[in-house]
Image (cartoon, rainbow, N blue to C red; front, side, top):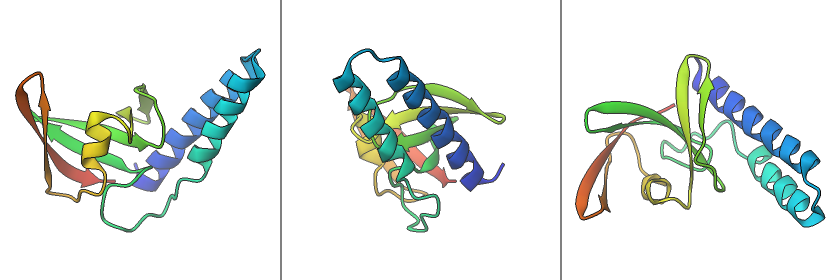
Length: 127
């Protein structure tokens, strides 16, 4: 599946979920926050050619011998979604892993200390 298509499908699913949540929210303030969050996703560039992980990037990351696909979101998420034949983990740029991979390139390693243990994540591919 084309990387641009992956990103488009991910964003469409998230935006649809935010719209549904906003429409169901009885609280005006919550509804406005959800709609503002939706706008953040609608502004993500589909044609980033920087060669580095940016907000909106779909990234294959290898950890402990296993390859996982992540979408770097502009705001909180933590969801896991199926897009085509792939499972994609949506992480926020504000999360530990999200902030660590921002601006990295293919081949870069990121070391994150969790519970006293260093975990090494390899940026395998930016889709």
